[in-house]
Image (cartoon, rainbow over all chains, first blue to last red; front, side, top):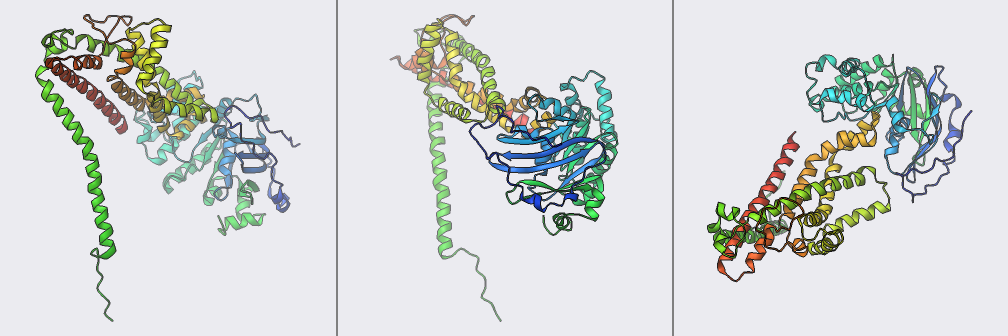
Length: 296
Length: 292
């Protein structure tokens, strides 16, 4: 059953004076939406997103997004620039909270809990849902400190050295850096930095890893390494990846969501099905146009 | 078919435009030289008058009514006391304010007003801070004309400058670092403490050093709270009367005797060297951190 929510109260950080039009745009595109283009994966859902809309000030960036993200699978979000895929992924761990004037309505349910419910603490959300960003952003500190930081601030009591090693091994970086853990994270190559950021996220022992175009700043070889790593990690984690690169989505994802901005610029979910089917037999004409390179 | 040869030497309008452009460069060079020239002239004047008086005795003697025996001892000690306490008082308040504004404050109209006021406060004449210091610290809190009253007044005076410099430094820390820390489940305070402050530290330190070097020359506000006095002892507590080097300079310049003018010039040299050293220190810190 779909649960409709009233707009959540403006928090302190938000502009009090902006009163964006609260009404979602009439869902014109849903008329054109093929009902069978968005499926319900048979696996257990980690996220169950329903009727999620988001505004940056007065501008709507997401319109009425509803789908389920399955556990221990790679789900890719694809679509042209400005279709709201990064906005959507940043809703999942409440990173959009950090932007002034953002308003969200709808439900992002994580294991049955709405992450936007008033009593939910974003810090608790983020320690369970790790994130890797578009541009590798290691802290200007040693490799060791980079990996240990998340665990440290979350009060990890175990053997930190072991955790660092295990996380770096999981991120397929250990063999390259094991003798220079004291070296600055910034001294690594771009691909290594990104794997360091993945190791850093893993050290917090999350359940989900969000990746926002993790390879867009990397060369093809580094990209391939990250893709291999994603396939390896998905055995233990749920991975959601935003990518511009359709080949990448086809290579790494189990499920693929295609998004597109409507006539008002609000991102909408057009198609969501197993990756193999999206790329070989798209149901929606717009998906087909996009993956065959007719636009975007 | 033969084409006309291409001429790339400046002709006609292009030649005129280029001549104007070249002339403007000389004009602006001239403008820059005015400042440099005046500064050099002042420095030359001061050094030629005062250099003869420079000696260890000049620095280690108490003031005296005999020009040749007068020295900077008590005023230099007073200056160090005031500046030291100023750093201790102003730094935490300035950094705290800057962190609040940049990291925690809601982005609303009230914040814009606060920021605007900070910029305005940085431009308030120091004599106004002197009057404020006299009313609040000397009279209301009863610090009289002591080092405490002076340090509080100077702290207040450099606060806007230091807050703005600290804000600038905090803004220099890339937001990707904050995102990275927050995404790992760090709280906002942990993000600030472990990442923003270390990243901003060189800028903050540079800012406070520059503010202090400006405060070192502060005269008006301190005269206002009563630091224009004859001190012939070493300050050992912040609750004693004091004087500072610029006040000593002012004191000497208003004496009728020619010898005191030499003292004043020599004291200016000492103050200038001290201030320039502080500025140099700030530059070194900035460069060191920029490279690492």
